[in-house]
Image 1 (cartoon, rainbow, N blue to C red):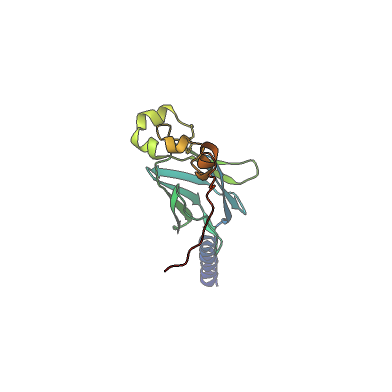
Image 2 (cartoon, rainbow, N blue to C red):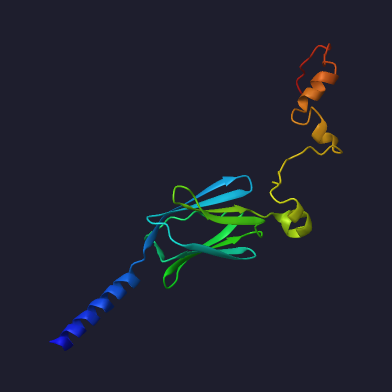
Length: 188
């Protein structure tokens, strides 16, 4: 009787530990993205907020959520000119989201918001932060504006007639007047 009771208790303890290992304590429900210039914010919504850490290696940043799993068919945002690739990976008891950037981010933070969401905020890098690292460190947080400016040495670009060249003739040429009478002749 004691021997069977020990087996029953052992089986019960084993089954509870297996059930605990197979079910994560929190689920990742949704991932959303918001952009403000060069600043990118990723919001992670959970049923219960997990422990989280990150580790970065140049253009790749791993977001690690302990004791977490993602819901099936979770929708991620697509890659673009800044974020090149997103790789979700389920480890033993954690969920890892690897994010690959085109340029090394200038800075990033990973924190919990007041409403229980986890926020990953990135100031993305650009081609200048890659080439001029010393300058990029001094100018952290400045956004590079891509503007189409006029080429001042090129007279075609500055001319008011560049889009409507026919108006050049109507403005500067006198009107054509033909005073000769027109006669029609048959061929011989």
